[in-house]
Image (cartoon, rainbow, N blue to C red; front, side, top):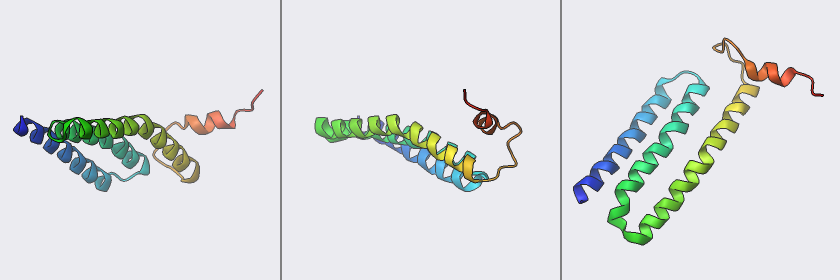
Length: 108
């Protein structure tokens, strides 16, 4: 059981390292936030699933609460951060910018 738990934790650590490499390699803020927003909860969930059997019921409960909080709040935070970047930074890589077009429409 311990070897399986440590293997899952190692997979979570590898996911986090790959996300860090992605943050360094990608050139646009949109791609960087996407990598951070997708890989962080996966890495935390893998590490939590691996660590839970080793920590007992109390530790597993704390890990479940932290994983649930991250899974519930990170997509919203990522979306708001990307929207703020879109509004403040000039971007040449967007072929079609639907957000700006929709924000320019007059409201009824």
